[in-house]
Image 1 (cartoon, rainbow, N blue to C red):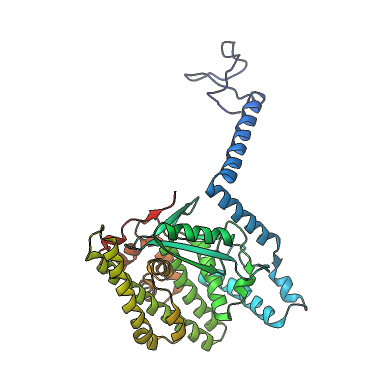
Image 2 (tube, one colour; image 1 turned 90 degrees about the horizontal axis):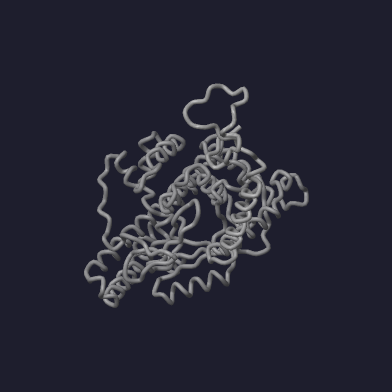
Length: 404
């Protein structure tokens, strides 16, 4: 029995039949039959609105395509234990699949991550590239272009399963005066909404990166701050690297663990390089007013030219796992800079929390998520915990361009 102020009661003026004494006001009896036509109209209206959204709006069509691709990935899944037991599975593939299962168990049992059903199944894709990721940034200031998505909020990148659509979006951004950066990605997380399988594009990675990727992606299942893409990805990078090193040491593979840690140290060196470059470009912009577009672009191009030399000849010799040819080809513009910072911002900050928590990754993760939850500036929350000063935000980085 439910009370409904919307359903008229024809017996309201009649004598009550074996009802207790009523308080002030009148009892309203819900009549299911009277709601059927109304409920049907509501459901039809919602269905029509949803159909219109998914077919007649750019975001709706994008979500429809992403949903279709995710459905295809899920439809082609096969349980990893079944593939490991299948004698037709090539031995190198079987070993990598076993590693994925072991890393998944370790992530849950030792690191304390919510793995849910992620990486229990495998999908062989029909192509070599899973998704293209697009980033954009102003050429005359350090501001990213952002896209809004339901649930996750605004993010400074957008993934495309339709490669022609990705190229058209890239060309539109470029024509509008933005730096653009379009690159492939081998894996993604649905944040636990679906049973994310291991993909054939990810399986091409070596064992060290494979374990790192598994732990990185399930970190998103455990903690994902809405609208904080830079923090989320940098945090997952930290957990993936420290978790993978711990994983290989627990397996009695110290050389593998050392290599994971060497790669992490190089990532932190690169993160510092991008941080310095970010502030150098911002200072170059600061020398010219906002309406001096040509001068600002010329100034930043000079900074990038000097940065290329420093990257190859000064930072290069310090890196143990990144070769000079990679550095020579590395893209340097605002879109690439902002995209790199999504994954490589303040990595040392996470490590300092880890050190303060006794080099215990599980404790460090709990502390970081506690500090960052519901914070508009989660990095500052970590600095406050560490007793470190809050840096002044560069003027030219405030605000973001956004999609319609």
